[in-house]
Image 1 (tube, one colour):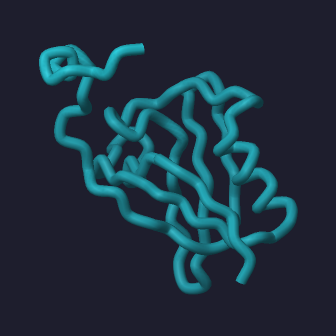
Image 2 (cartoon, rainbow, N blue to C red; image 1 turned 180 degrees about the horizontal axis):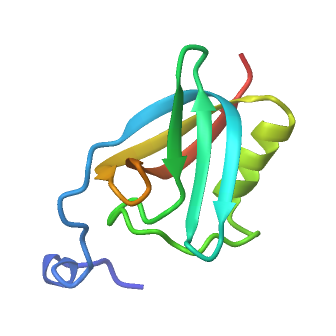
Length: 114
């Protein structure tokens, strides 16, 4: 395959202004799945507070369908059942009045041992 040229890069979809990536570290305290509403939330407790983050598109902030083969969900589920620490790379799209919480979208997941 030939290398991508500058002109070809113009046609590759690029995200608009997306919030910066921040990290949440702690233990998974809660997993809430509401399939009909496409509302999939995990609560991460760092020992002092719980932050709720959602599955969705980390470039638009929109909810996505969550399927059983989602590797990020598999890692979060593993962390929950094995009481492991987890780090979530998230993007905050601001307050969601309908949900009553911030629209913090999961971009990446890492598991680690203390």
